[in-house]
Structure formats: C-alpha cells, structure tokens
Amino acid sequence: MSATDTRRQEIIVLTDEHKNRILDQIRHRKETCPHCGGKQFSVGDALYLGFLFRSEDSDAYMVGLTCTNPTCLAPRTGIRLSRSELLNT
Amino acid sequence: MVTLDYPAWLRIEHWVNVLFVTLLIRSGIEILGTHPKLYWRDDSKPGTEWARFTRKTMPTDKLYDTLDEEESYSSFVSLPGHKKLGMGRHWHFFTVIGWMLTGIAYYVLLFVTGQWHRYIPYSWSIFPEAWNDILTYLSFKLPPLLPGEPLDAIQKLAYAAVIFLLAPFQILTGAAQSPAIEAQFPWFVQLWGGRQSARSLHFFGLLAFIGFIAVHLAMVVLWGWPQLNALMIFGQVRHLGWALAASLAIIAAIVVVHIAATVWSLKSPRTVQRVLGFVISRARLMFLRPMVSRQHYPRSALSAEHRVNGKPPDSDEYKVMAVHHFVDWKLEVGGLVEHPMTFTLSELRALGDKQTQRVLHNCIQGWSSVGEWSGVPFRHLIKLVKPLPQARYICFLTMQDTGRDEPSAEGTGQFYEVLDLSLAGHPQCLLAYEMNGAPLPIKHGAPLRLRIETQVGFKMAKWINRIEFVSDYHAIGQGMGGWREDNVYFDKDVEI
Image (cartoon, rainbow over all chains, first blue to last red; front, side, top):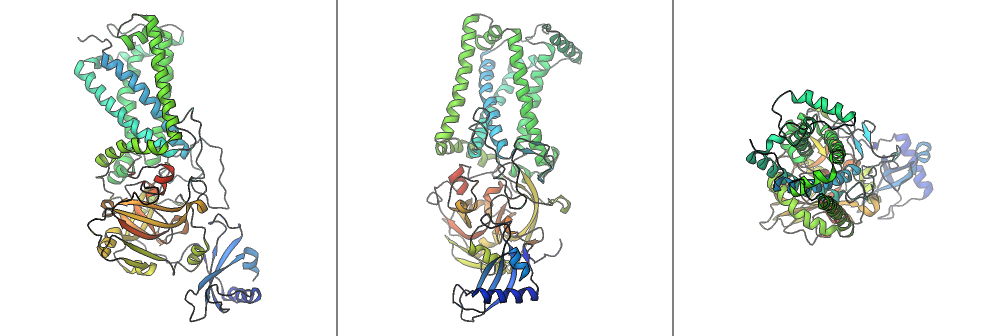
C-alpha cells in the first residue's frame, strides 16, 4: 500500500503573509485567549466550516490560534472568519 | 399417480402465504423508502441511480447525509409507513422467518405427498401449450386444463416459476444484502453483480411478486371466484355461497392483521422492537453471528466518493480541535478493565501494528460504498487494557449530540453504540484513524471511528472520544444497546 498522506484534506494551509494579516486583525478586534486572557497568538491553519457544519454560514472559516502565554493551560483556540475576511486579511 | 387435489395442508399454506407475502411487500417498501434510489454499482454514487422514488434534491453547498434523503411513505403501501425503518425491518425479518419455514414445509409436503406433479412439467411440449394458452386468454377465452391436472399449461409454468425460482431468488438476493454474509462470502455478493445489483434484483423480485398476485387474482376472477375459493377453502367445489363468504372473511382477517401490525408499530414501537426483535435476534445470532469478515477489495474497487451518514459534531470545541489537527483530542478507555488508559491521536498511531482493510460498507438504509480503513486492531487495545471477566459489552461514546447535529433523525442526546465484546476480537474490528490513505475525514468520523465489517453502518460509531467496557447495557440511554436502538428502534445485532 502507499504511504499515508498525513495532511488532513479539510485543512487549508495559510501563507506567512495571510498569517501576519490575521494577526493584525486579531489585534484590531482585541481578541483574547478564552482561557488565560492572553493577547498574543501564533496563527495556524484554516478550516472551511460552511460545508461541514450545519449551523455555520456558507462562507464561514475557522483559523487556528495558539496562545503564546507559556503558562496557559489550554493554549489552542480559534477565530471564526468569513471568506472575505480570510481572503482580504 | 397421485390425485392432484387440494389437501388441507396446501390450503392452509396458501392462505398463510398470502399473509406473509403481503407483509413482506409492505415492509419491503418501508425499507426501500429509507433510501429510495436503486443502483447497479456498489459505490451508490449520487446521480448514478437507475431508479428513484423520491423528488427530493440534495444541496451541493452543504454536507448532507443519507438520512436527509429518506422518504416518508403512506401506511397504505408500506408497513408501518411514515419513515419507520426500524419497524419495517422488524416486520420484514420476522415475516421472512415465518415465510421460509412455511416454504420449507411446503416443499417437503409437495415432494412427500407427490403433489409436486401439479407444478413440475414433464415435457418440453408444455412451452408451446403455454404459448397457446396465452393466445387463448388474449382472445378472452379460457384454455383447457392439462389432462388430469388442476391447472392449464401457462398456470403450471407460472406457479413453478414463482415457487421454485422467484421465492428462492428473493431469499438469496435478500441474503446477499447482509453485511455478515458479504463479509464471509464476498464471492456470493459478486455472484449477483455486487451489493447494489443484489438490491436492484431484489426490487425486481418484488415487482414480479406484485405482478404475479395481480394476474393470479385476475385468473381467479376469470375462472370463477366462488369455485376456486371453494377448492382453496373446502378442498372441493361445493357450498359456493359459503366459499364466497369465507374467502371474503379470510381476506378481511388478513387486512385486519395488517391494520393491527401498522397500528401496533406506530403506537407502541418499543413493544414491537422487543417482541419481534427477540425472535429475529435468536435467528441472527444462530446463523449470522458466526460469520467473520476477511474482505480485501482491490484498490480499483474503492469508491471515489464514499457516502456519508451522520453529521459532524457542531460544537466550537470540536471545530477548534479539528483546525489544530486533533492535537487536544483524547480517547479515554475505561470501565471494567484492569488498566484504564487515555490516548492522544499520536499515541494511538504510535501503538504500531497498524492494520489496513478495503471493505464494503453497508448502510442500514441500503446504500453501500467501498473504502480503505486503517488504524488499531481492536484486539490490540483489548490486550492493553485487559477487560475484567465480567465485561461483556463495549460502549462507544461519541462527540455527536444528535439533537444539535442530526435533525433528520428522531431523538436527542449523545450518540453512542454498544457492541458485544465477542465481536471486538474479529480480525477486521478496527479503530480507524485513516481512510483511503489519509487522515480520517471529519465527515467520516475524525479523528476516530469504529469498523466492524459484519454489521451495518450505524454500529460503527464515529467521532469517538470514550470507550467503556460494561457488564450490561440496560442502564445506558434507554437501555436498548445504542442511540439508534433507543430512538429509532433498530436492532442491536445487525448482521443483516
């Protein structure tokens, strides 16, 4: 059998440029970590929610964020963005 | 030469058969309505159906599952009607057990008493005679009966075809839709052209039975309803008035049984599930439970788009886990075990002994797809946690909240399924974290789902986050052995 493709098919890998723009938007929105209140994040990948989840708008995406506070006990969180917000960031 | 008359056993079997065949037809239509599309290919690819009995169109911009495609038929045509697959299955399987026992008794008695002469032709000359009979009927006349026999040539051939070909054909094409039989004998399914081909052929068998019944009734009317019913009730042409009355009374009684079965199923489905399920489960466990899956379909057989049932957990917690590749997901394994354990996805992957199987997936609704699944053999997990002697069942708990995630299904609450511990040691019982060589997709149960190939699809819980070994399942949920068993009255053991 062929080797396993470890990449999750639903995941969208973001470029560094996209990630920097999302960080700007997080600062603009004054997003904080829901667990420790931290304001610093690193940006991960994106997931298109609109197709898979029944409550989501058709243009909804989630971007994975990781709280950079080293003492945070649950650092992985996410931010919901629309398609235009994701593409225009 | 035996006299080809109408002995009591033949008359009784005839009327019992009327009841069973009509119950089978209505409950079969109920089962058909749950996935009202017929295919020739095992992938059941949307749009490739050769027949559809629904006007529903499915969205292209939103995940739908096959529960969304289900149709609700009237109780006039289906038993019990109104989208009650669990009830339809109970009636279909309960009746088929009775029908097969009746049929076996009928075959034995036919050959022991010599009554088989009424159906089995002696000479090829019966075919031109049958053709002449058809022409005679088309000219609105009655053809002559065969010398010393109760039937004309075309009737003799038609009865022989129904009794010795159509009835076994329906049983065999029905059996070819059992995941346990498919898993143990993949060649048997291929004999019919595949799982969906068997389902389509089973549907043609249904049409053939309906056609036969219509022509049979027309013949009885043409030849004389009171006379033929006198033969089938009293065994002789006598008391024609009473024969007419008795025939109508018997038909009325059969209708009453249908109405009672329908009302009972709609008003008290739990009782039907328990009573009929008791009989069906015994038969299943005796004949189908010993079967073991050793399937390995070629890569070329994989379905390009494996169909889906169930919708992913619509919670922020799940979505955050998913966007982070399920790093924070944990599988807890506990209950009646010596070593309760918790695994992350990478720890499960690191267990080694990864097993891959390419298998036919059978949904209880009737569709199928072929997929390749990889993961941890369940027997490997059993060795690690060591179930205690009193553990008899495994309860798979999931992240799916059916009220929130699955509005097409009746009922609410956390989805769970219970599996007999004896099934967990099967060589293809698998905790799958990969599908078709890639991480298990969200719509197919990411990050972890069960594969147990001798059962229908709903037993293979998706989006699993806890596994509990238990001694009894009656205190879990409503106590029937799973969320679908609790809420839509499916059977707990589903080898067919």
